[in-house]
Image (cartoon, rainbow, N blue to C red; front, side, top):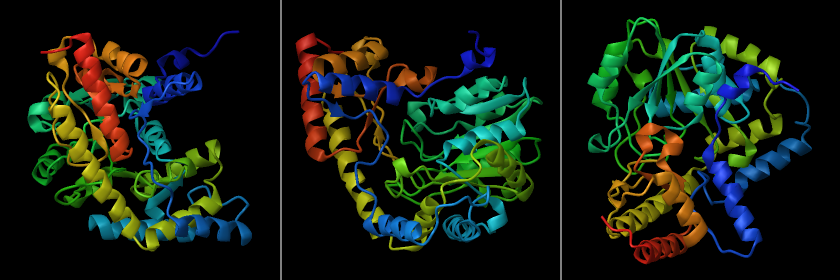
Length: 391
């Protein structure tokens, strides 16, 4: 049986493939340290779980509005208004099962085949996958280590053309942990304000920040009217399996995204929405404690990686990923990541899983205990010594 040609343009997310391989090795009795998957290892706070149970018992088991429950959209708009300092109302919010649909729906609603989409490289692989799937032209914007993996505004300017219809920004970023400084966001806003293009600002890691304050491009004049904020509960509240995300955008676009929700998912799970509302409105001390622990783990893994000959690792400013440069080892990074899993029992990702700009790098998620991180560092060092890998 034949399949539609556009399926060949659809990519994947390597983290889940490596996780499956690691699980298969564990089934054979191997002990694997999991540093591949971008998922907090903390449990969802109890008060959020209790809110979900209360919602179930109160009858939140039926369909809801495609854009989300009114009270949930109200809570999200209030939260985003407070955290970004930009006024939004519930009419600007669309609630989705996880945050990925905001990427997909945003591109479907705004991009035609042949349009150009600028996205960061290295970056979350679903950006490029969705651009290719829709028949648009992916235009990678290289994020360079010497700039702290931030956006080079001059390079962005050189990529903008009359065909550019969409720009994707991600700060704090996956896989690098880099952030875009406020002054650079202001310069980007000046570049695109008068252009006929949309901006997707992926701010899913906005609360996992170790220094300074989070800044959104929507804070600059004229940008609220052309920007989609992507956010959600997975990372901030350790709710990855709950599948709860949202987009905040101009009303006209929200109406289009709502129709896409109607045609694809009908609505987002309503008792999960109620729990997510409680997450935003309830105590935030567990979030703060989680971020403090991530910072402690960041320092352990970065210091440990930098102590290994041939490895250089910047200290990420946000998210929970270390992105060390291993180019001096002169081993293809895809092979190196595979060998670390097969021979050292450490699951990580090749930087190439995030685009050509990731060649020469590995990504380690430090959403794991300090003990396990130290075990991984010991195994990595031991494997490099045994294999004779030195600069």
